[in-house]
Length: 370
Ligand SMILES: Nc1ncnc2c1ncn2[C@@H]1O[C@H](COP(=O)(O)OP(=O)(O)OP(=O)(O)O)[C@@H](O)[C@H]1O
Ligand SMILES: [Mg+2]
Image (cartoon, rainbow, N blue to C red; front, side, top):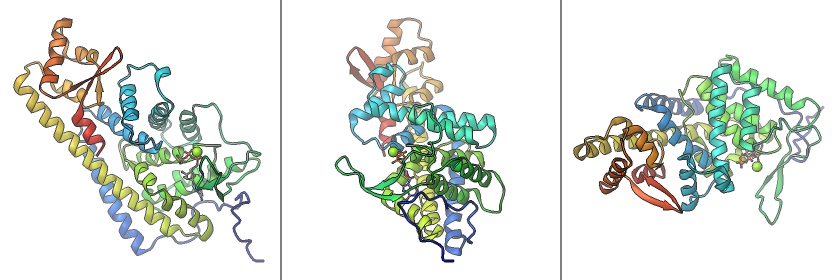
């Protein structure tokens, strides 16, 4: 009997289990994989150079969150975001997109914590990442939910259906179990390639009502950590994917419709190579700037310390209170003097927002936005 042709309007309950039965490796792909692995290994090594990784990683993950939620580069939005991470703003006063970015970042860190304590990627990790992103207590979508993926969707028209994910009692659970087994079992395929295969599979299963793209992109990073390719979930993978979204959608469909694993995997290896390079650049730039700022500040300010320097590079917006805690300034007058010295030297600039005053590290912003 002939295999029925793929129909994008029918739930794809025949989505094949992993691993792919077809031989997916060829020379061209292996060469590409080699380059991607090498650059990623450089990034992982580069992370060791960061003196206080948690602080700096905080800054870097902010960018990832921002790109993945596709918040545009409007300054006011950025501004809101930076203020929000300086942790002095009431949640209610944040706009919707800022909240969304912050939730994405929390989901990334929450997932990282769950992964570290569970010691492998499991259903709990996947569901908890989704729940944080969407701020919900829901889990997998129900068998009757009518979820489809549309292309070119806009406020004016719904767009054409490009894919209908599997649907039915127990089917999502079964496919997720197979996916996790593939991810967690050694099977001769390199983890970097497995990440890419798994990302396709996760998106094809489309286990949630919404947020599958974002959840899947977080899982990519967590998997790299799980497989010890990265010590921390920092890699601007989302930026590349969002910038090449048309290809991304097209190539995902290519696996479904033509079993074209090769083009998909080539794309993902390129994405990893390009983003690991970019992340390395950002780390280099931040470290260079930190050093320069320290040397410069130390010349005029006896009280300037490495710890303060690190804190000034942990987030773009800093509150006076934070500087007070680190320097241990004895009085308000001293602290005010410290702040005005930092401003006078051009290390920070002042930004007033109603009654709130922020001190901004413009060098850090410039690097983060490069
Ligand atoms: N043909 C396809 N087959 C499988 N998955 C697809 C296909 N086209 C797109 N996708 C995936 O569906 C995701 C969108 O699904 P969903 O709206 O649930 O996620 P999101 O996180 O809300 O959105 P986004 O990824 O745009 O931020 C895309 O990011 C992509 O990963
Ligand atoms: Mg969506």
